[in-house]
Figure 1 (cartoon, rainbow, N blue to C red):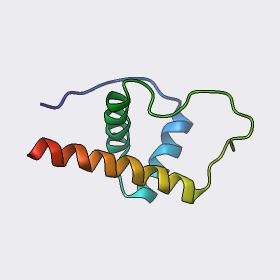
Figure 2 (cartoon, helix red, strand yellow):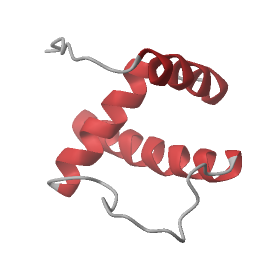
Figure 3 (cartoon, rainbow, N blue to C red):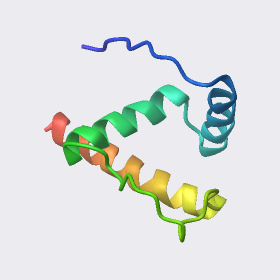
Length: 84
């Protein structure tokens, strides 16, 4: 069963996220679902939460696509397991 979640997000972040999601061929809702599933699988943040000056503040498009592919593949695997 699906459920709704309501939360606040900065308007510019929402706009930027929607544009990126459109380029990736997904909705913001799908992106949040991918994150939520990854969060559950990792039992916490599915990525390091740290201050790292060596990490670029704006990842390249290819890095974002690589990350999205990784999450989409993991999400698809969850669905395959649930279908069995």
